[in-house]
Length: 158
Image 1: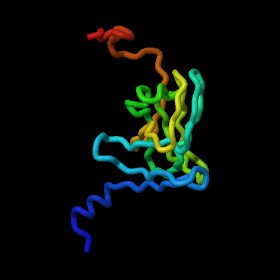
Image 2 (image 1 turned 180 degrees about the horizontal axis):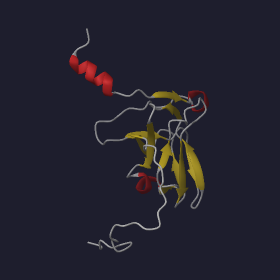
Image 3 (image 1 turned 60 degrees about the horizontal axis):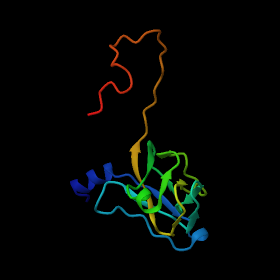
Image 4 (image 1 turned 30 degrees about the vertical axis):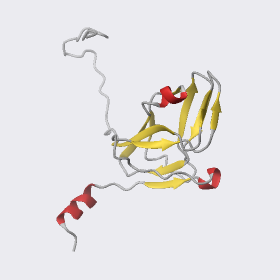
C-alpha cells in the first residue's frame, strides 16, 4: 500500500526520458541535479576548438522526451563567458516537447569572443523545465484604454 507522501510525490513528479549519444561520442557523464543551484547542468559531448568570432553548435550529447505540456529553457552557465569567452548566440534556448525524436540532439549555439577550447565534459550551459505558455488568442483593437507608462526606460536607472 502506497503511503500519502509517496502518493503526493508520484502525482507531482514528472518523468523525463533521456537518450545519451554514446554511439557518437563515447562514454558521457550522466545528468544529475546537483545540490547547489536550481538548474541542471549540461556538458560538452566532445572537445571543441573555436577561433575568435567563430560560431559553432557545441553538441551536448543528449536528446530528451519532456513531459506533455512542458518545455526546457536552456541558458549559459554564469561562468561560461568567464571560463571560455563564449556567449550563447540566441541568449536563451527553448526546447519544446515536440523536439523528442531519437536523433533530436541538444546543442549549445556558441559565439567565441577569443580563441578557446571547450573540453568534453565541461559544463557550459544549464536548463530548467517549465510549463508551456497556455494557448492564447489575439483580439485586435484600435485603442488600448490603459494609461501610458512613459515609454522605454520610464522607471529610471536606479
